[in-house]
Image (cartoon, rainbow, N blue to C red; front, side, top):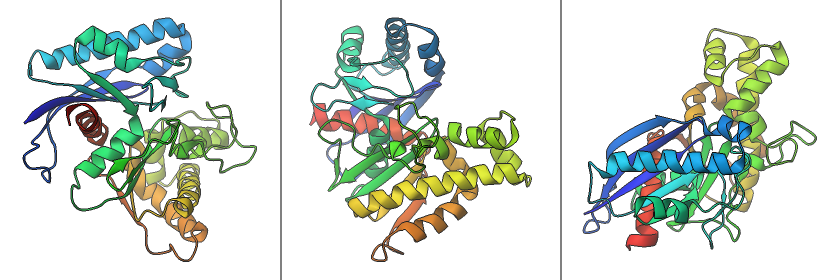
Length: 317
């Protein structure tokens, strides 16, 4: 039995879990023993501090979180981290993080390993979540696309049971596919990216543009359930943008199973009608009716479990 730590780093919080996995029974899914959440607000911290100060704060907060678990579980053998950014598959460095501004070519794996005395690997957070979804379906599927709807929109791809990073670590950055030419400015520097409409911040922006009122995506969801037409329209636009990007992705990567996760997936009932209509319109006829889209049953735990299983795959095996 191998005991690992999986971490999902977000813009506003850090989620950490202890995962055990029995190599003797490889078809048995990994088990999340314990989970902790820490409020961090890394996103705003990066905006108002120097990159060096922000990086030190991220390292310290992550190390403290790990130490709190390591004391309780001294047999932890390694740490896997899902991080929101572009991860170089050869060097493990975070080349850029569009939602954590200023972080360029930082080495979380090496820096954190030196602080905590354990092996560390870093992967893109959406790829980690994709692998978590795959690992819990062990033996059931070989291919999977994961779309994580949060502050931004991330994507992860599993092909033949293997996480696919791409040559430069930017595979499945579906949130940065253009769905509105000359549209909203994105943190990546381009205009009209899908995540500017289909993410929590995108929904908030859509509502603000229509009403000049600033609410969170969750508050807008509540307004939509109460019949607010502008709130309903904001979520419909999110569904349309998400479907546009997914349809183009599926034309290139013929995968039958798509899992929708992230905090925004809680509002799937508001997103789904426009999403389904747009996806059916945009898919080529050969794919219509052959794509299984489901909402994650793991919630935030997919990224934690996936990060732990990826470090098992890369270091323990």
